[in-house]
Image (cartoon, rainbow, N blue to C red; front, top):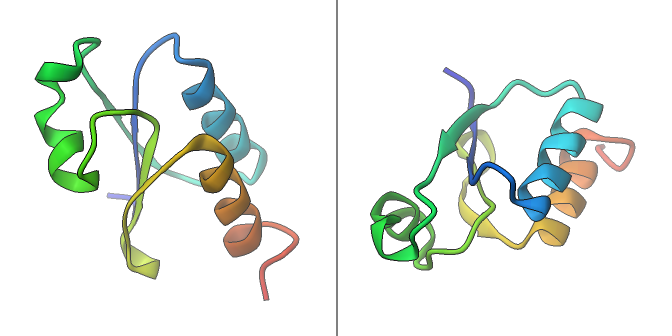
Length: 85
């Protein structure tokens, strides 16, 4: 199992942006498809405190539920991309 877990919704352009970055960086991740109905997204709500997607979990770095695609893409760049130490 990968340390990276992405909660996403099929057809979501914000989720697609994160998936593109994950693939660009050649990172393995687990995809968790969430229901289209916000009221049924109990798993993502338990992880992040909200029902929006995408949400990233990175156990190796203590990220327990990062929302917002722009924040996730920036985090991935800084942690695993050219910005990584």
